[in-house]
Length: 254
Image (cartoon, rainbow, N blue to C red):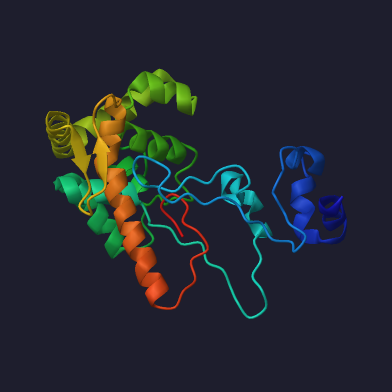
């Protein structure tokens, strides 16, 4: 009822009425909202094997991003959602020392209008030299998600199924990442072998993963994602020390 009323009286909500009803839009909507109009959802910052936080049911961050406008600040305060930009790719580049990856990272750092995955698409000749994230089209999603999944060991068939794209497209993305970033693959292969022989893998900050009985994709995922999480934790500490109030950590964001 509240959402229908807002939709009637606030022109901001008018686009939401196009194509689908509000009832359909919020069909699965459920948040543990208390009498004080606040949501106190479970926050588990070390929930995953990589130390990442996992927003569970009851957290607005476990819902679609379009619901985040519901987060409101009290008078005199403001909220910011801050994430580590292209975090996993940049950490993978830094840790492996892959020159092709580092070149892309340096180009994006020098020009904030550029995007890591758009630059990868340009290197693969599937984007025009002047393309940006806004102009590159729907292929961007496949290259970003597919590229990260490839870095963590997913094969072309899995990419095609999960992204709902033709197998030939998934194989092209998969093969390009393997061929263009060969140094990274040697690095991650050595990390996996070393971890299996020692019985554990460890971050620079000392977070350990028992490598026994783990999937190969988990072992390929751990070095990059867990060290990226170390960076997030250090950043959160510095933010608190500087006077910011951290509401929660969400994957690679605060």
